[in-house]
Structure formats: C-alpha cells, structure tokens
Amino acid sequence: GAVVSQHPSWVICKSGTSVKIECRSLDFQATTMFWYRQFPKQSLMLMATSNEGSKATYEQGVEKDKFLINHASLTLSTLTVTSAHPEDSSFYICSAIGQGADYGYTFGSGTRLTVV
Amino acid sequence: LAKTTQPISMDSYEGQEVNITCSHNNIATNDYITWYQQFPSQGPRFIIQGYKTKVTNEVASLFIPADRKSSTLSLPRVSLSDTAVYYCLVYPTGYSTLTFGKGTMLLVSP
Image 1 (tube, chains in turn blue, orange):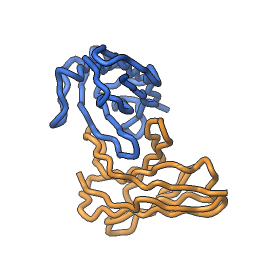
Image 2 (spheres, rainbow over the protein chains, first blue to last red):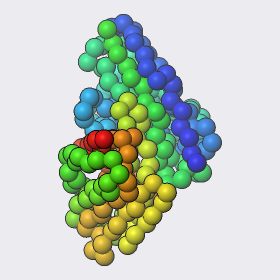
Image 3 (cartoon, chains in turn yellow, cyan):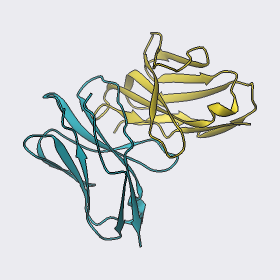
Image 4 (cartoon, rainbow over the protein chains, first blue to last red):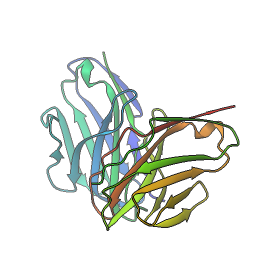
C-alpha cells in the first residue's frame, strides 16, 4: 500500500529559529499534498494544500509567510515554520494523494514540534 | 463536503463488539464514507471505505443503510490496542480537501 514518510517525528527548537519538516511519498507519486496541524485533544485542522510545482493554497487564518510550503517534486513536500514561537508548538501531519495511493489519502506519522 | 456527527466518546471492554455510528444527512450522490483511526501522536490511518450496503475487511465492517444518511463502523472483538480516535469522513473520490470532525474517542478497558 501507499506509504508516506514524515521526518522528523519530533523536534525541539528555540524561539525565533526556523524548523523544516519533510513529507515523502515512498511508493507513489503525490500530485497533491496536504499539511495539517493538531493541538492536544483537538481534531486535525487543514493548514494548506500544495500541488507539485505550484504555490500552496493556504486556509484562512494560516500565515503563508510563516508556514512556508514547498512541493518541488512528486515525492517530496516540505513545511518550514519560520521564526517559531511557543504558540506554534503543535503536532504537524502531512497527507498525500496521487496515482498508486489506495483510497486516495495517506497520512504521515506526524511531527511533534515544541518551541521553547 | 457533507457534515458528519458522531459520538464524542465510547467505552468498551476487551473482546466486545463496538459499533460507532456516524450521521451524514446531507451526503451527496458521489460521496463515499471513509473511516480513519488515529492513535496518540500518530497520523490517521485508513480503516475502511464504502458507498452503500456493507463492506468488510480484515479490520472492520461498515454498514450503510439504503438512504446513506448514516453509517456504522463495527469493530469485532476489540482489544486494548483499539483504543484510539475514530473519524468518519464523507467525500467524493478523487481530489478533495478533507475536513475532520471531532471524532469518537474509543477507550477499551481490560
């Protein structure tokens, strides 16, 4: 079946620094990737949608200059949290859809970001 | 996308069958019903998908009545490892942004 690898699984960074999270589709071509954020005991909230080779589409209220998304290839998308602050601490999850992905949507294992 | 409503939480014991019902009154003709499972600090995992009647796989069964306004996820003989949040989503095949509701927190006790 389709596999999406997300890295790192957890990261701690200092306030003001930037953090990059990678999302890779291992056995299929991800034409579209999605980035979600999940706070404790809450549901997943869609942050942005990215198509390979195009600029990402951000959901209302998500700062595009703070959460930089790059989807330069059919197997890799990255989310960079720039100038991170403690309120950015959350669980970030990517998802991908594309040819070869059973039932459409496959999720990564998530990244726990803690900003201190 | 069709809005879904499911119980916030459910409790069960090991070995019991668990049925989680999801309401989706405004489901569209081309919508499929999909259930995902999420363990703490992990991404959601696909469980089962169906359009009508009954679908069964090695993990669960999905029952969908004729009017498709609701669906029931059935987990046979649950174990402690089935403790997780279960999400019911309704969306058409092909590209579509997913909207997650609150899900159902299933707690399985010994």
